[in-house]
Image 1: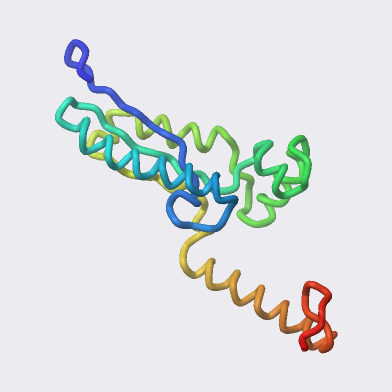
Image 2: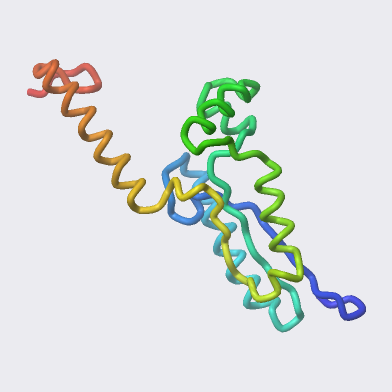
Length: 158
């Protein structure tokens, strides 16, 4: 859409799950993948009209959603802040996500179109995925060694 020579910018909210990073409930995962697909499709369709379309995929950010997942209580923002600060040196805040949106809407991002900007402190790069997999496998192996007659779910191996 062009209005008086101005260029339009649309920025949508995806998540790392929409970029194929991590796992989540099926409906949530499908919705986030849809945001990424719609972003790419709309970017191509609207480009001739001067409209840029991008998405943002934030990682763990201090929010009620993250607090609900991490602490089981959407109001436990302090716990989320502490956990993220321990992991990344400081917690990611909604203002950090807003800064990415401001950038994508700015003239400095004039050549960015059809992108999904992942902002997660590199917490989901392939090495992190592999490390998480091996940490889980090691933990399960240690539990099995300590209790060889039981599975992690409490049942028998036999």
